[in-house]
Length: 350
Picture 1 (cartoon, rainbow, N blue to C red):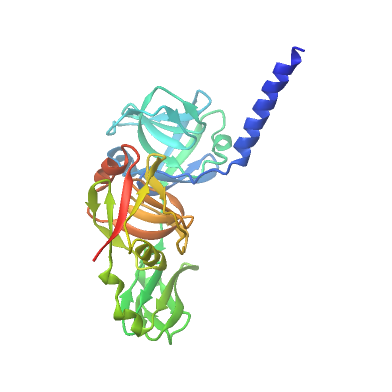
Picture 2: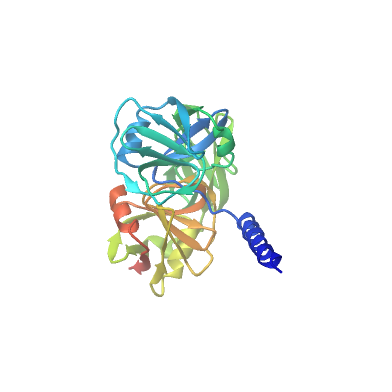
């Protein structure tokens, strides 16, 4: 008779464990900042250093190669040769992959999640921490940090009218080494990134750099579609009671969002996620053209076709870009979005 409570407890443990393995992990993000490459032992990881004074000071020291010591079965640490700016706060819970500064000169890389009452200054995190614990090992390990060069097109999709021109760039690449091509020169031609729309149709503009291709979808509209330009319908955003200026993308997703709110404003209840973004349901599915994107503070993106995300931090994930808030600094965005859930309102200002 006494065995039944024990069996119940064991079953409960097994069920919880099974649920943990079955629930898909949410995208791991990082605070606003710079993409970095982090090598722990013999394994390389992607990471982001946040947009704060501490991280910026550390970035100036890169590349760094540090022998980091083991502590407590959950972290590697190294006392640095100088003091760095601090903004220490109680973090309550450390997550595997977090990179923080303890005090003003102790850099810590955490390879295991745990609760803590200690105060740290957040520096960044490893965005793909799978395998980090094994790479860290149980003894001292060499950890290397270097800035990661991110190459991307300035535009992923465009809608143009016949006769119009638009220049796009391959950001992070040497312009003279980029080879441009079009899938149909009769619809749209391209030379050194300058696209010339000729007649209605859809083409793919390709920038080839170091054997890798970066593509932009271009839709050339029928001329009569310009009778009512989209520009006449200004899509505006409010965060709480504050109007913010947005440079909206010229793509199908934004056009659909503009149509969605053309009759009446749309108020979206947002929720904080991870200390770097606010996310909320749109209530409808929009066209999507997800591409791997490293966001920054102020970026507005579409996630899964039906959720809008506004960043006051950064993430590297597959999104459809919607726009960027242009009149708020990273500190302003953190103040607007980093102190609890907010509502955003989208409307048309004719």
